[in-house]
Image (cartoon, rainbow, N blue to C red; front, top):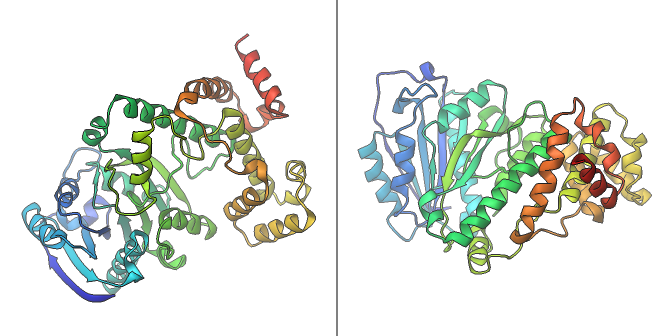
Length: 411
C-alpha cells in the first residue's frame, strides 16, 4: 500500500462507554469515491441510541474510514462531516496498487487496522464492526449489535434493506419484484430455521452475511486470522471461518442497515450490475437460492438430518447420506473434512459433488406467488409440530409425494 496518510478527529463526551456496554468498539468502513454519500453514512452513526431511546455518547465508539484509491474528495468530506457531527473518526487514505483496490481487500485493511488499534490500547475485549460508505445504519444499530454480543454471539450479521428513497424511484414493477423476493427469502429462512435449527441463531433470522452490517469480537477476529483475503465474498467467508472455529454467528433481524440501490456499481459483476439487469428485465431469474418450495425443503431437511448425525457421531451410518449415492472416494473425503470439525465446509463440499444439492433452477419473479403459497402451507404445518424435522420425513420421498402431502393439508 502506497502513499498512506491518516488523520484523526476526536470529540469527547462526559458519559463513559462502559455505561452502554460497549467497552471498545471501532467501526471500519472502506470507501471509494463516496463523497456524495459519506455524509448520510456518518450522520446515521452520529445519532445512535440505545433500545430505550437514550443517546449513546460519541466516546463509546470510533470510526475508521479507509479512503481507498479515491479520485474524488471522499477523505476531505469525511473530515469535514466528522468535525460537524461530534464523531471520533480516523481517516486513512491510500493510493495503492491492486493489493487493496478490490472492495473485499480494502475492507480487510480497514478491519485489520481497527484490530491493531484495539490491541495497542489494551482493549482485548473489543469489537470490530463494519459497514459500507453508501449505507445508512439504523439508529439502534450499535445497541442491538452489542446486545447480540451480550447474548453470546461471536459474530453478528445484520439485516440489509434497500434505501427506501432510491428503491421507490426504481418503478412499480421493480418494487413488486423486490417485495416478492424479500417475502420468499423470509419463508426460506424460516424453513431452514425449523428443519436445521441453530440454538445460537434462533428464528427470526436471515441467511445473509454482508459487509454492509457485520460485527465480530476482537478475540474471534484474531482466532480466525482476520478477515479472509478475498476481492469479493470476504463477508460470507468471515462468517464461515467463525463457524469453523467453533464460534457463534447470529443473523439478527434487529440489527438493520439500508444500503444503496444504485445501478452504477463500483465492482463489475456486483450487486449493482444484478440490480441493473433486473431493472431492465423485470422477470429475469432471482437469486440462486430462491428455488422451488420442494427443492428448498429437501435441502433444509437433508442438512438438518446430517447436522444432527454429525453432532451425535453417527454420520457414517446416516441413511440420508448413503441415499445420495456418492462414490466411495468422495464419501471418504467428505468424512475426513467432517472429522476436522467443520460441518459447514462439509456441507459446502457435499453440495459441490452432489448435483441434486446444487443450485440449478432459480425461480423467476412470475413464479414466486405459487411457490410462496406452497411454502407457507408447509410452514403452517411445521410450526405446529413439536419436532418439525421428523414430522416432514414422510413428505420427502419425491416431488410428487411432497405436492400430494401439501394438498392433503388443505383437506
